[in-house]
Length: 283
Image (cartoon, rainbow, N blue to C red; front, side, top):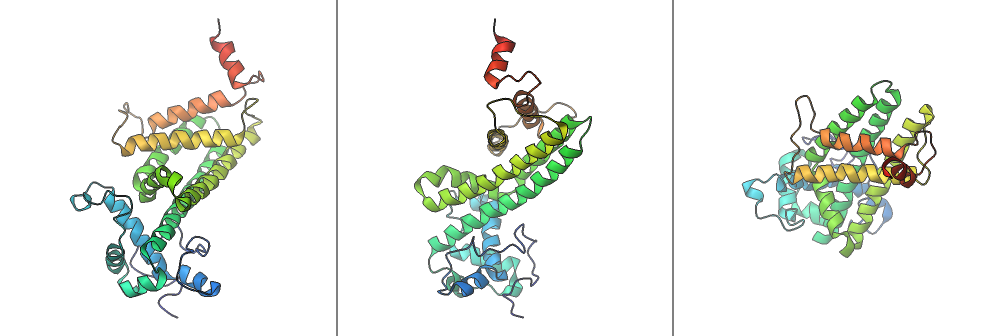
C-alpha cells in the first residue's frame, strides 16, 4: 500500500477529520479527473499539509517571538512553512515542495482548501462536543445549572485550545470581501446551528417545555452561539472575568446561558418575550 493512502500512521496527532471524506472540502487540487482528485484529497500527505497549516495557525496566535511578523492574514501559511512543518510532523510521508505543488498549482488554491479544512475541523470537534453536552443535559435531573456551568467551562477551554477558532475569527471578519471565505463560514455556522438546535430539542422535549411564543429553536441556537463566541473573543483578547472562589473559567458564560434559558422558556403564562418583560418591569 502506498504511503499516500488513507490510514497509514505517522507522527502527527490524530485529526478531528481522520477518516472523514474530504473530497467535498478539499476541492482545488490539480487533478483533472474527479476520481483522482477525490483520492488525492483523502491521502495522508494531503491531510499532513493541511494539518501543518493548523499547527502554524496555533503557533502564529500564541504571541511567540518568531510569529510576531506573521500577523497579516494567512501569511504564516506560506508553502515553505507548510512543507517544513509537515516534514517535522510526518517525516515518514516524505513531504516535499514538489509534492505540495503536485496538489495545489498556486498558493491561493491551497489557502482556499486550508480555510475550508480548518473550519470543517472546528465544526466536527464542536459538533461532537455539543452532542455529548446534549446527552448530559438530557440526563440532568436536579442539577441542570451545574451541567450548564460545566458545559460553559468546557466551551471556553475549546475556544482557547483550538487554533481553528482563531482562524474562524479571521474568516468571519474577511468573509464579506471573499466568496470562498463566506461559503466556508456559512457552512460552519449552518452545521453548528443544527447541532445546537438538536441539543435544545433533546433538552426541552422530554421535560414538556416549550419556548416562548415568537421564539424559535433556530433563534435560540443562534443566540447560544453568539453568546459563546462573545465570551471566547473576550478571552482571546485577554479581557478576562475574575472568577470568584469555586467558579470555573466559564462562569461568566454560564450565567449568560442560564439567563438565556430562563428568559426563552415559557414559564406557563404563554407570554412572548416582550410581553413577559413588560409584565415584569412595567409600572
